[in-house]
Image (cartoon, rainbow, N blue to C red; front, side, top):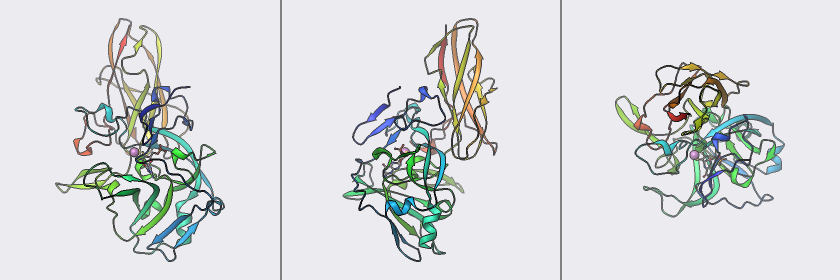
Length: 349
Ligand SMILES: Nc1nc2c(c(=O)[nH]1)N[C@H]1C(S)=C(S)[C@@H](COP(=O)(O)O)O[C@H]1N2
Ligand SMILES: [Mo]
């Protein structure tokens, strides 16, 4: 088995070795880990998830009460908004993820909408804030004084659609690093929305302006000619190549399986592969079945060149709305959303 790539031990930040991709589901001990603060210790017997704010009644649930509510299992890919940051030139601050801050699991839990129904969401509700138990000092100024908890919001319409409050990951109870005993799983959004160690939900009648969606995990969005600081939300269409790896030496005049994964907020409709630095693109084969909110594996059987030379490979995904990846970096994304098509150089020998 492949080792996780360690980016930071305290707090724990581990990367899935993406070149080892071989299945649609990432095994739990290979699933990337992104933590801002130390993993909290939680007493399961006294644990409760509370819902308050713009609701008819405050409600709270024990773990066994949550497990008795309607149960669904969904395959969802999580990608950290900083995935691929190491490829930005010049280098930027933040965890230097390569391609492995992305993974896919089957999550089991109760729909957030089922919990909200029990609380009764008021008509003026706009945003839904999810707060984790973990806390620590925020890194980047401007930051609130003292320790803060990890919290993030989603619009109420999103909260009522496809969000899960999960307790199982790949049919095993959540592990401490992935948010035990309860976490949100927000399909089609970057990972920062999927709050781990979730213990408190606040329904709000105004947009949340917390640290993790202003100082952190926000970008400058062009709006009517002005730039507006906006919380990151949906993932962007993207393909990654697992094999070959950058700088790999592949045999000449041979059959070689180029493969990887592609994902986005909408269905992946096509993956294209260029074997000549972007001059021409071939259509790769999409593997398996489509699952809304999860990545799609793809492959291309390549007859490698007869003569030894270096080759530049570029993969590019398309979605069902006809959107594809830009070839150049859009600087408005700042240190996040590394979604432009990234060429890799290999050697045919
Ligand atoms: N409570 C809490 N939730 C959190 C985080 C965190 O640090 N604390 N990190 C977020 C980020 S940025 C990502 S990308 C995902 C990662 O989930 P994973 O560690 O299970 O892969 O969790 C999100 N939820
Ligand atoms: Mo993240």
